[in-house]
Length: 464
Image (cartoon, rainbow, N blue to C red; front, side):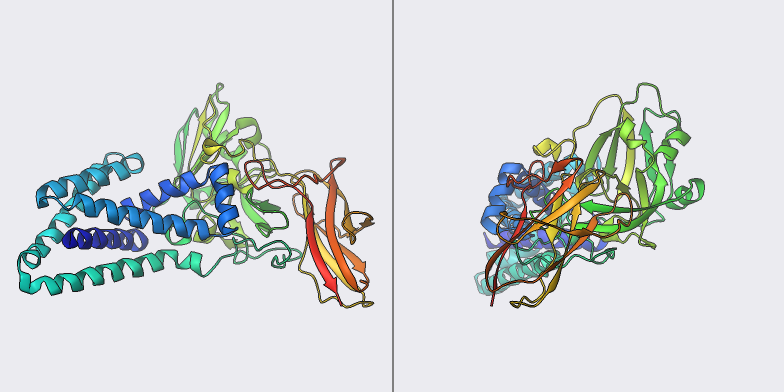
């Protein structure tokens, strides 16, 4: 059993090292992605959310679970003769990789099986010689340590926390009042930061295919040279943002119009849908009529600097009025078709349209002292719909005061608000709500999925 365990651990560690540092396909990553994909169904997401809270804990558990499945499964496969075990490992690896690697899955299955075979052969003398079994036990412990270090390296971005983590209601991080830096913009991934694509501009091209007159591949420089750039300030929000959460940010974006790109390659008359595909395996679709609106961009700059790898270098979609799940990063392919291709998360029961719902929040509260005036601040946002009014209550919704809305920075930017308040001693329940498009923000408390959270941001405070 120990040789099989050691071989499975070493194989897992090598596949992770090759994936993180060289970008080679890892069957362990594929297993992890499959588990997180199923954890992404609304029912499972809500269960994990209730069990572990918001943040990346679910991904940590999924990675640890996939590692245990790998080690257990490959250890069991390896407890038969060396050659049969090698064949079984090759077939298992092929099964994990085939959906994402196509024909190359066969090549990588052979490579991983050969590595497994070599490790087992190297361990064979230790297994058959009683005097050397102590060395085998030492190797077993060392193998577990190697996998632990590898797992720590992959999970480190999650363990150290990220701007994607939404704090519990009442303890949210302060949101900047104007522009959010690329460093501070929230981050959410279908995988985790260590396994996200690290694309090389020299090797990257955007493929435009399907129902177009001239299927074409563009380099990043060609996109910059051949199309007039457009700058646009735009607030992006995540559909999984909880009530009062911080998975939202306002930035300046620069890119080219999708409309200009498609006019250059020519759209066939029967084309009705556009599908975006990304290097991380994510995909989404949109009615073509919406995609060719003037403010739909393929962005390569954020706040005057190139996108970093975390936020989609070299190209990502910017789509006003929709949550971030409709705006893939690391874009590699655009396809026009006559039929809809249901999106990555929509296939799991999430929203098909992902339109932004009206939301508002109170920023981090200043120190409160009875009789001492303070200025409360916050934001409200309703996508492409204008926020008409923001109201604040200090008594749990019995009475409301109208907040002052600061001048809106841009059409698609969030609305900033302020309100002077002189608190009295005792208990206070602060609430905020906004009005947009002639309607009041929904008071009904709903979880983030499948159609985004709703409810008024509420903070309970005691003033001494």
